[in-house]
Amino acid sequence: MKYMVISDIHGCVEYTNKAIEIFKKEEAHYLIILGDFLYHGPRNAMHPTYNPMKVAELLNDMKDKIIAIHGNCDSEVDEMVLKFPLVNSMFIGVGKRRAFLTHGHIYNEAFHPNLNEGDILIHGHFHIPWLFDVDGVTIASPGSIAIPKNDSPNSYMIIHNDKIDIKNLDGESILNSIRRDYNQKY
Image (cartoon, rainbow, N blue to C red; front, side, top):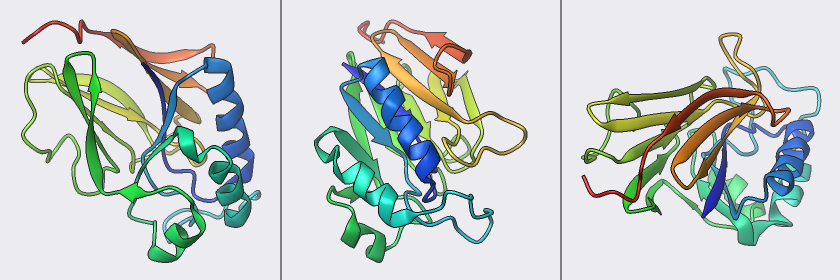
C-alpha cells in the first residue's frame, strides 16, 4: 500500500491542485489529509488563492481515495461541504506495524497515545516537516502543503513499503527519509 500524506491546506486552491497532481504522479493508493482543510485560522495569513468552496469541490471529486483527520481549524460547517468523513484520529496498518494518524494539536511527539516500539506517529499542525525516532517510535510530520512555517518548504510525505519520504513539492527533492522493516515483529 502506498500512502501520500499532506496536512494544513487551509483553503488554498493552488496547493490543493498541486497536491492532487502529485498524488496522481506518485500513483499512491490513498491520500491522507491530517486536518485543517478549509479555514485559514486566526494565526495564518490568508493565502492569495484562498477559496474553501473550490478546495472542497476538488477534494470531493476524489472522496473515495481520501483518509481524513479532523484538525483544530475544521468545524462542523466545513464537514457539511466535505463529502467524506473526518475522524479525530485513527490507526492504519503499515506492514505489520501501526501508524497513528492525528492532526497534532492534541497528540504529537510530546504527548501521544500508548505506542509500541516500531509504531509510527504521524501528525501535522505545526506546518514543519520532520522525521525522527524516539524510543523506537517513528515521529513523522509532512509539514504543510500550503502554509509552511520556520522557513520550511511546501511539502508532503510518501509512505511505501519500508520507507517514509518527506518531499518538496517538485516531488524529486527528498527532504528527509527513513527506512524500517515494518514487516518484522518487534
